[in-house]
Length: 587
Ligand code: M6R
Image 1: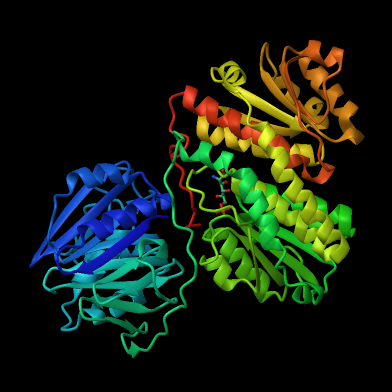
Image 2: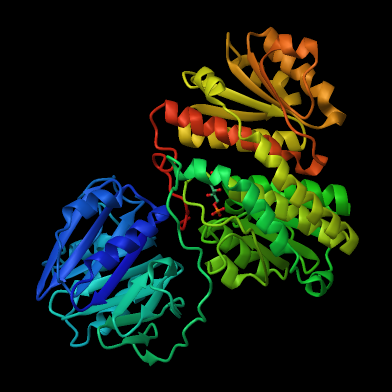
């Protein structure tokens, strides 16, 4: 997955594209590139790393046309050669692409047979080569001809050396938006790149031509079509880091306000629509952190609605065989709303007749566009790759949704509980530096818990591993003796989460079994430690009181702070960990 931006502006479009690229770095940031089209010349600049590095390389320019790209490598290593724009023919076309061309190997062989010499390891070069293969009088024909040959997903924009002041673009299964005001025409993977105003959403198979004078749309065969602008939707524009050194820390600190805002926004819930949903099974579907919130959501639904509910990873759901019927309620959770697997899972559930609800933080996202009922997570922009405040908002939203499905009285009680939680959370901004210093030299860390605490363990482990690169694993406390204990050595850290009275003693027993094998224990629980616990644990953190279902949100906050501190101590940028991107828009 990658981000693309293109702009046509008299007087220079370089800065429009660089600014746009900086706003969509969440789509990948391992390398970047930009093509300035000045008269009949394509000037291409590339840099490994973040957009700031590219910005330093690209000179000030009056070029009317520019296209740019921020990359998350799928095909070919991270290097300047494989960074986009990719050239086609004899520098006749330059292309930036997001998606995966699934038949690129076959196409590469075919085109090599016709004499095309490939210079990169990317699947994108097939698009560039196809565009350069013919010289139709109207370049829209080149695009229509090329896309017929492509399988997989793509959003691309392309410039042709011989064409003045024009950008061509097309999409299939990867988002692409276009914008036109008298001053500037733009194309991008996310409308956040555009000035405020109405924009167009390209549909699968559509082609777009942007020039200074106008914006035109064509179907997949190159025939002109009329398109209505999507009404302008409020976009959460990204603010800076403020007083914080990193977005991740800022976002953790924003959790209480986000939770409060969420409770207010949930008051607008459409009860009439909700009550019409008749179901006897619930599937909650997401990826990564969103999947963890689905695990908690499923637990809420089983406990409070007494309904069969299970959480599934979208990547598994989309190819697995899971019984779905008209009596299934399928709930999709995604911060970005652009996760390819989650979108594909939604399409599958809809085809099978399930009733669907989407919970997302981005109300102009693809998931929000396709969802039958869309509920906001209301976390505000989340820039750091590690999802923090969005996770807490997802869990709170799933709690209020569960209560709404139970009945109005329960719903309003849950709103009040979530509002109270927002205040309680503030007391958890504690100094984790000592704990972090203890953990930061370790090679492996274990997280254990039972029931919902096991989900907190899973999320705590994911957070720490993705931004510290320490091997972290979470297990249900009762599972240790079934294999995991073999991995416990002298001073292996085991972080124990125990916030559920019903199974508190059971969790303690498992923790002490690990201690007997040399583990160093750290405790996060909902009550002050007993004297014997103080002896056994290196550190005991007791959480402020809150209703049991919401304790997961309290317990995760110190673990997020711990991960942040460990990441910084290890000299890693927690906002942009290696090999990851904020939004996973490819399969
Ligand atoms: O945007 P989404 O919520 O759909 O993203 C899902 C996952 O990719 C995401 O939660 C990922 O696991 C985070 N990096 C975890 O911090």
